[in-house]
Length: 572
Image (cartoon, rainbow, N blue to C red; front, side):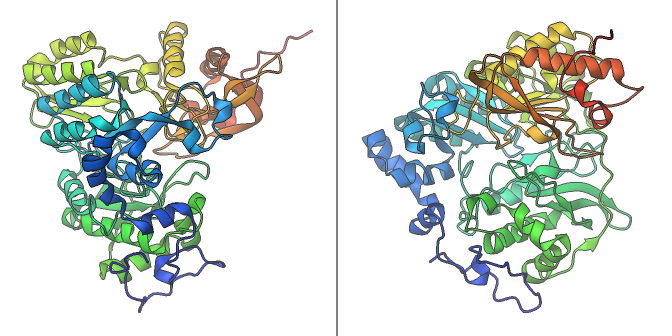
């Protein structure tokens, strides 16, 4: 049986909607596991796998690992087996997971809005160079992601990371995934409220806590007090967004039920005001509802967004207030949305007179050598440290005013830039087929080549056009909310051969006019033809746009021929 100590008692004040069929909701009495994932969690709390890694598997080697741990509970420790080499995208859906397993691991290190000082950056860099073949990616969930990790090395990596205040705990799994925090929390001149304290308290309550280690599926959290909404709050399970109440002052609105993948949904804005010291209580309430009422029967429906779709935000708020918080939330209009969300690239003055410097790698790909070098730069310039962003970038905090130009120049020397082209600045890519067992196509290298080519073809681009590249339908790179979203799949080329390619989503956006990208019926692009296709669409936009018209607004009205990248018809 699942541990029901943390469930609310049968609701005394609230009528709970019941689905037409049992969906595995604990609070409605459906406690028997309905799939192998739920059975595995019932058999053993995934948090217990840490000791087996430390004292058994790391000593006896890969072949000693229990398959239920290897393909299940290891995720709670931030570990996935990576894709074995030699399997093309056509094998992704045809082979069982164990057939795609390599004997090496991907490891996610969570930062949760933490400032990474010089020693922390060097700890990450050293783990990369010593144990991960110098691999490291910045993900769009504020993680550092390593590859080529051997099970024998995991204890030493954990020891090194933990000495620097870092952890891989619950970076994957049916758990509170890494939290997105504003990279300029506490320093931005235009910040509404600094949410760092609340985010740290959520982390303290959530991580390693059996109350939240068995959720129906992943649970994504974002928190920002910055008016640019710099953590993509619309597409997280729970988000706290800075707002101002006319009487009570700065606090947070609560947004719930966002998420992408194959059934994309934007979050519901509750229109409330929550003070800083009650944010963690509200987070526990939302996570508790998901734990107790979330759908556990089918993995494809085991996200909070499906519960919101069925309940509606009014019922969700009623349950949250009556059965979890035991108090009413304060009404307050949701905050005004920015035209576009902030990425903080470039050099900006802080409220204390020092400066922060936002820098871009290419599609999040860096390496351990770069991380260590960045740590040395942070110390050499007396900066406070770096935070990661929701856009696969980083922000260095606390650079002296007189040092900003020199610091930016030194960033260039280690492969980062505070002066990126619009293409480098606004392109993201997921891990792709290089390491991911779910992927169908290459993403990182293909995106790097795309950025290079677009920089050559549009060197003077006067606007920002986001390009998000994903290797499968799961939208880890937020495909549907980019100007140009590319979802990897196998397509037919002109010779009738099956090759790597993409389904195109155009005109997606977050911020003032949030929307899912427009898919063109039966339109696919080969990977080989991607440079020319994107160039054709961008050229059409630049020649056809009205004054001040955004790419997304143009897509909404453009002729489909232009969106397909087709040439102008030749008149007789």
